Structures are given as C-alpha cells and as structure tokens.
Length: 483
Image (cartoon, rainbow, N blue to C red):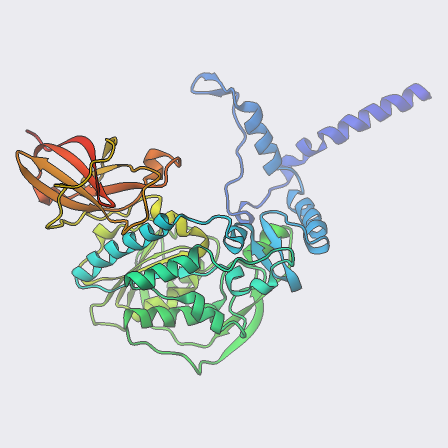
C-alpha cells in the first residue's frame, strides 16, 4: 500500500510539473495586451547549425505561452498593485485608483536630466527644422505633450517627490529663449486640469485633453479653427486603458471617456493599407491596437483650399486625428521620432508631436534634412582642438557626414558647422548637433550629423573641419562623387 502511494505521488508530481506544457496547445495568450509579439517556439537548428540560444529562447517561449498567464498576472498584480500599492508590470499604482506608466518616474523625479548642452541641442535641432519648413512656405509647431504625472502629480504615490525642474521645464525655457515655435501644453493643461483631461487608467489624455491640445496647436500655427466651446458631450465608461491592460490583463476596470457630439468633415484615406470603411479605419487608428498606423494620408472632401499638413506623431497623436483631418485638405501622419523633413512638400505645415518621456530621442538620430549652407563662417584664426574621427554613410538622400565631439564641450550656442576645403575654396554647412546613437553607439553625448545634398555639386576630396563652440576640430578628408 505504501509503495502504491509513493508511485501515485510521483506520478501526480510529474503530471503537475508537465501540466503547463500539456495545456499550452489549448490556451492562447493575447499579445495585444502587452503591445508586443509573443516569443515563438525556437528550433534546435538555425541555418544548419546548432542553436546555442535554444534554452534562453525556449524559456521566453514558455513564459509567454504559459497557460492562464493573463489570469495569473492579473491575480498577482491585483495583490501587489491594487492592495499593496507596489509597482508591477511597468505600472505605478497611484492614489485614488490612478495608474501611471513606469517610465514617467524619471521625469517626475528628474533622475534622467539631460545636460545643458543636450537641452540646447534639442532647441537648435528644432530651429533648423523650422527654418527649412518656413523657408519653403509652411508653418511649424513643436508639440511636447506632458506626461500624465506632470499634470496630475498629486495622484502619484506619496513616496514620490516631484522635482521642481526636469527636462520639459528646462526645454520650455530654452525654446522660449531661442524663439522656436512650440506649443506650451504643460502650462495650458495644468490650467485646465480641474476637468479631467487624462485617463485614470491609461497613460494618455482623454478626448477632452486632446481637444484642448488641438486648439492650442492651431493657435501656435496661427490657423483659424473652431473652438467647440459649446459642443455637447457625454462621459461614458467605455475606455480600456493601456495601463489597466498591463496591470490586469485578464480583465480590469473600464475607464471614463469624454464623447463629443461633433460633426466632422467628410474624408477618405488616400494612402492606407486595405481601407474599405473610412470611419472604421479612423477608429482603428485612434485605438491602441497600433495596426498599420506607421504612415497614412487623409483627404478632406469638404476643403478645397490646398492646405497640407505633415504630422510627426506618437501615441498621443491618435486622439488628435479627426480634428487635424478637419483642419487641412490633405493630412499626412507619420509615426516616428525622426522626421523626414526632406520629403515634405513646399507650403506644408509641420507639426512635430512627441511625449515628454521621449524628449531625449530628438537628438538620438538626426532628421532627414539637407544641411543648409552658411556664409561668413570659417575656421581661420580659431583655436585648434584635438583631431576627431569623421564617418560617412550613404543614405537615400545623399551622403551623411557624422561623428563624435568631446564630452567636455561647453554648452555655448550649440551650433556646429562643417567646413569643406578643396584647393583653397571652402563650403560651409551647418550640421545638427547630434550624436548619432544608431551609428556610434550610446557612449557619447555630443556629436554632429549632416546630410549633403547632391545639388551642392561636390566632387573630389575635401579636407573637413568641424567648428563647435569657437574651436576648430580637424576631421580628416571626405571624397564626394568621382575625381
């Protein structure tokens, strides 16, 4: 009897041990809840060779496809988050049922402070974009959207102490000082926060906040627009927040949404993947499903004024879509942190929207924009710094010259110039003050990046000198075209 009991015990133990693997084919976890692709079942062989990463890959696969994973995460996070108010699943559980995205805390506490030079480099980068757009007959508005915790900091956990300044406050001051056209949504939304303008259980603003933001952006552009001050609306519990999904993937709390009764203009998508129902496609783009929303263009059928918009956006831009489509005859929406300014038609307005928590990305990769010519700037008489290494990259638009600058470079005007010299003649261009993280790695903070237009007619070998903060840095040679 004792032996039979031991055998049964062992069988039960191994059955329970193998049960998750046996149940995997019968349970399917939803990848949309975490906005990422679930790990795939790995193969023992890759390209005819033994897959040395099989164990790690299988561990990821087993974790992602564990039966009842969503239900177990929900139970665990309910205990940790809702009851113990501990951080879980990249979600900060605040006061009164408010949730915040974990990446916001660095801005809230100012633990991710950019250097003064980096802040000024963002302003210079934006000024070069604005110079190009306005020089070709368009208007420009930079739109940094505040983190939810910036507007509703009192809802953060009591253990979090807000810093008096952070990257957004410092950049706001720098943009004001340098005259770059931007929308100060931080001040505007703080003044409007008594009426709830962000979701409690989502990281984004609700439609009320988005409507306020849209009006402010139109004011920045100097574009006439309807205020919708008296528009009727209802508040309905219809929104499943992204943070709620992360915290309680098996089913959580529906959030309030402000639903306006606004008659929007007729439109059609002229560049979009597989559109049959225009309204349904717009609703899809405005949701958090993020399906094929990388680039699309809409035509307003009620506008015949030739107005054009190019909007660089992130997830905050979803709620702005119907109002932007109403405002222009043609609207193009590109989801990216790196604007393709060179592709924008003359006379097109550019809105560059980005969330506060992503401000650092502006100077991680230089926009696609030809380096402008500059007159009256040369390296003659300037002190010579150490020689720096230059790099080249061939792009679809021309040749990019880029490289690193000394880390101890002072935060002066942050303007960087490239002097190309050949047979006594020189060509001077202004570069973006950007350290190309994609090409150079994340090790440095200061750098330069410039795309040379083929219209410059450069040919042969040029000696390159980089000018930054009144110092000339020799940078080897660069060969253009054919000699």
